[in-house]
Image (tube, rainbow, N blue to C red):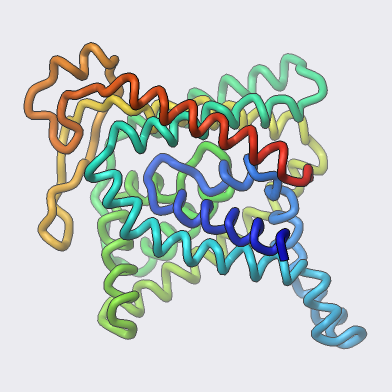
Length: 317
C-alpha cells in the first residue's frame, strides 16, 4: 500500500510538471528513481503480448507490462495534470518568482543525482553534456511560432510533446509553446474536462493519437541508447538539465505577451536577468520587480532538500 501511494504521488508530480512550460515530467521520473522502470514497462507493450495472452491470459499480460505500476503512475499523472491546470497555473500567475525558484531548485539538485550514475567520464561524455546543454539552452531562448488547428500538425505536436516529456530537461509543455500549440491544446483540455464531447473533441483525439505514437516509438529509442550507450545517454541528459535551468530562472524580464482564448493576457516570451536588474524593471507584466531574494532562496533550498529526500527514499533503478 505504501509503495502504491508513493508511485501515485510520483505520477502526480510528473503530471503537474507537464502542465508547466520549462519543467519536465522526465526530470521528475529521474529524480524519483522510476525512469528506466517506466521505459521498460512502456516497451513491454508490443505485439509480443498477443502470444503472452494466448499462453498466460490477462494475468500474464498484466505482469509483463508491469501493469500495477503503470496504472498507479498514470492515475497519479491524471490527477496531477488536472491539479496543475488549475492550482499550479494560479500559483504561477500570483507568485511567479517563488514558484519558479522552487522549480529551479528541483532541477539544480537533480543534476548531480543523474551525473553520479555515470561511472566513468571520457571525452565523449563531456562532449555530449556540452552539446545537450547548448541545445536545450537554445530551445529556451527560441521565439515561439504560431500554432494551428490543422489536424496533421496537431498530431505532430503530440508526437514531439511526449518525446520531450520523456527527456529530463525538456518540457513537453514548452515544446508545445514553441510550436505555438500550448494556447490551443491547454484551453481545449480545460474545455473538455468541463464539458466532454464538445467541438474540441476530435482535435484532442488526434493529439492523443500523436502522444501514443510518440510514446511507444521514442521509448524504444531511449531504451536502446540506455542499453548500449548508458554513460553517453546519461551525460546528454545531464546536459539537457543544465541547459533547462535558463527557462526556470526565477527572475525574468517579460518581452512579449499574448492573449489566450479566454481573453487573458499571458507571457509569450521572456529572458533571464539578474535580481538587481529585475529590481530596476518597470511595467514588468506578471512578475513585477520585487526580487524577494530571501524567499526565493528559501524556496530553492526547500526544493533541493525535497529532491535529496526523495532520492534517499526511492528504490534505485
